[in-house]
Length: 162
Image 1 (tube, rainbow, N blue to C red):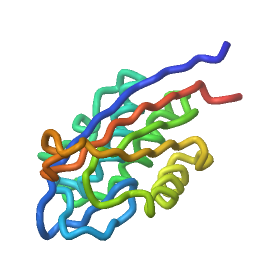
Image 2: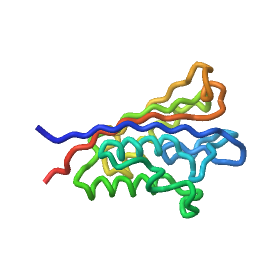
Image 3: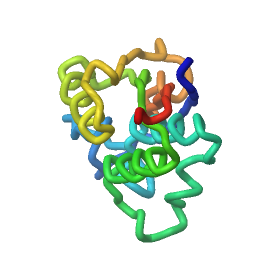
Image 4: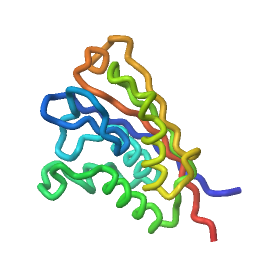
């Protein structure tokens, strides 16, 4: 029986002016962007936390603290590559990722293929191993009021073959 580890992640950032809206490494067309120390890519952040959680390695704030200026404006796909290398150094690889983005707007369907492909490329897996879904919060809570965007992710890791 193969060794498996599962982890879950969550992130939320508020929306604000004069910022790009980046989800899964893809820049979306929207008048507001996510506010944060890095590029504030909530989807990629949730995936990283899920991967780290699967191996009890803490969260992204431990590795990329918002108090450290070297991470200001950082490309979250580069951070994801670093987390992926960390789990590989520990003898594990991603089996699959499943995630949900919670946003009232913009419509995410036109971007889903590109988001999946970018994430899969960074993780070194097939697109089919990265699930990305989107939903609204039915106008409830901060995401429903369009104050922010949230993401949930689950990562399944397996021991590296060989």
